[in-house]
Amino acid sequence: MAPSQRCPLCRQTFFCGRGHVYSRKHQRQLKEALERLLPQVEAARKAIRAAQVERYVPEHDRCCWCLCCGREVRKHLSHGNLTVLHGGLLEHLASPEHKKATNRFWWENKAEFQMKEKFLISSQDYARFKKSMVKGLDSYEEKEDEVIKEMAAQIREVEHSRQELVRSVLEVGFPRRSQSTSGSARPRRRLFSAWKLERDQQSSGLRLAAAFLLGPATSPGA
Image 1 (cartoon, helix red, strand yellow):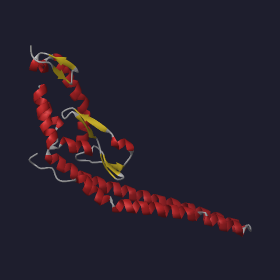
Image 2 (spheres, one colour; image 1 turned 60 degrees about the vertical axis):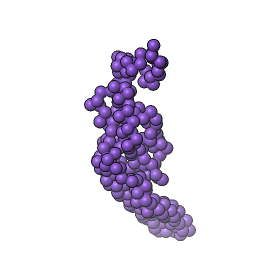
Image 3 (cartoon, one colour; image 1 turned 180 degrees about the horizontal axis):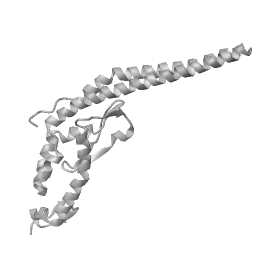
């Protein structure tokens, strides 16, 4: 009798040696497991030519399970206040370690050969993603600048309205009211100035964050 072995996909112990991987049950479990991972890989592939950069939120720390490597990997790539969507998974799929583990997984489980390339990212595609990520960072910075302009326009509009109110009050003989009303715009200016300073500091660190996220180039021979 062949020694017992444990199949992580089928979650059972078998005694038929290598013959188990050819069984209907194992091949069905293998297909279902790959189909669960494939949508996440396909979503990451779309980011190769159109990387999206967003402000960091805790949900960006989410991980996904790599069936080939048998471990969790980061789904997104975050640094400071910025997150590149799907960057973590793409970085993993392009790594030499993942390629080696995928080759071993395919051989051990007798998976369909034509499916293997769907779970790998070439060094050329990862290089394209890096260029796309730089464009995404530039686009993010432009959107943040637009937000600042909109906030400034809103503050100017509010101050103009208050000044009109002050003039109307002065015309009916309430000068003291004008002083308290006109002064109420000052906290808004200070709040906006503080917010803009924070935004400028983030903008100055944007290029540094990009350099960190990009990392070393993947070797073409990987």
